[in-house]
Amino acid sequence: MEEQNILEKRPKKVIYRDGDYAVKSFDPNYSKSDVLNEALNQARVEETGLPIPKLVDVRKNGEKWEIVMEYIPGKTLKQIITEEPEREEEILSQFVDIQLMIHQHTAPLLNKLQDKMKRKICETKLDATTRYDLHTRLQSMPKHNKVCHGDLGLGDVILSDDGKFYIIDWAHATQGNASADAARTYLKFSLTYGKERAEKYLSIFCKKSDTAKQYVQRWLPIVAASQSVKGHEEESDLLLKWVDVVEYD
Image 1 (tube, one colour):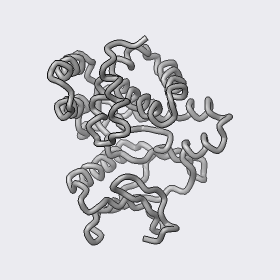
Image 2 (tube, helix red, strand yellow):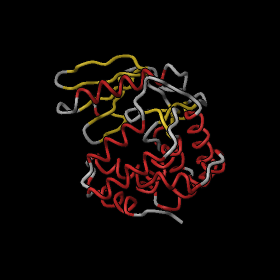
Image 3 (cartoon, one colour):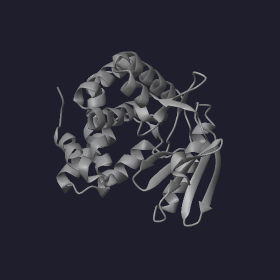
Image 4 (cartoon, one colour):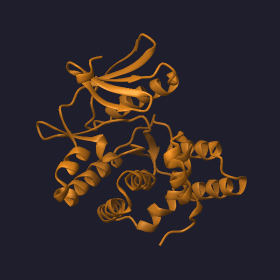
């Protein structure tokens, strides 16, 4: 791939443009099952009618697996808010509207969020007592079947050149409780932008969805524990601090 065609570089993967397509290229040692699961997630979410890039192909390019999808020309909300910080409230409001639109859909063949969280808690290095408390809390949370992006941030929403929104990166999609999805976004905002913007996001989400902030906050230890096993050492310590907090003000 030509350097000028690279759209984004991430740990263990590169996204580049190839004509009318965007190609996500994974390192040779990347799990084949994770690549195929991401492609399957995208196909299943595409079938809901949500505005996402269409899946075109899953292929092997030398030693690398690649997912090929539509290329959407435009800017992400992350780019827009960086270039025009005075529009923060407007952009966050649009972002929450898009997240709530996702939650209005169902995709019965997606993996269940509760099952994923249960498995991830078991994979943590937390002590048995903490794991037990997290499993108990998870079991007590209402079980829903809404489409959850699982890692939604401002960089995952593209405003296309024709004024339409598209949602990308469905690797972590599940069906489950929308407030767990919001808790994940809150943590992502906290790690990326700091607490102030994260709190603004959460306030807007709770107001628009008529959800008690305390209810979303009850998901934070569960989601933080799940996220801590991804192997990002720079995030792990911060995430585990949320796990240690039982209740929030």
